[in-house]
Length: 172
Image 1: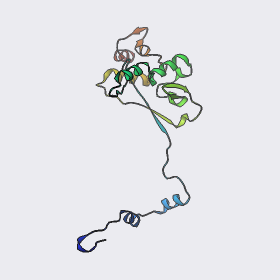
Image 2: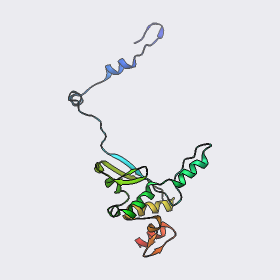
Image 3: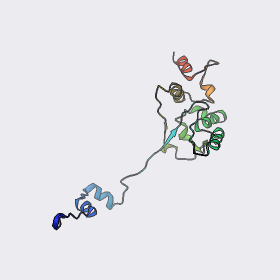
Image 4: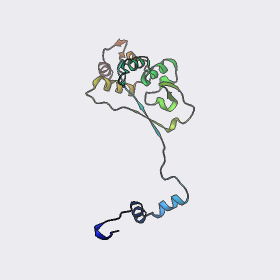
């Protein structure tokens, strides 16, 4: 609406309501009180880290306490290794499939009671330039019963120094 002396009065709410068009399908969904939007699956991110290279966030003035807590803290990946050592059912599952049957509570895996079909597990994408972590990720995607980092570097009772040598030995 234009007022005298070049002033403009703008009412955003009224303009939105006046310009809104509700089509027949949307009107029926609203009249029947059906959900238009919903949440179907939860996405669980699975971290990939090398031995002794956990992600740590430091706070100013509390660096020593944070580092000490990080040293003693269990990661999801290390907890998965421990689960494979103690649970025969978990040894048949890949790292990305573990979320269907187990739930991670405070970085400890416990058997899931229900709802495993509503979880999508995603491993962090890594650049091939970060070679060791990239090859570790490749091994985690294909080795179901990994019990440690050392286990993943072992082929035919030979322990390799890096994950890339182990991976190329298996594939060649």
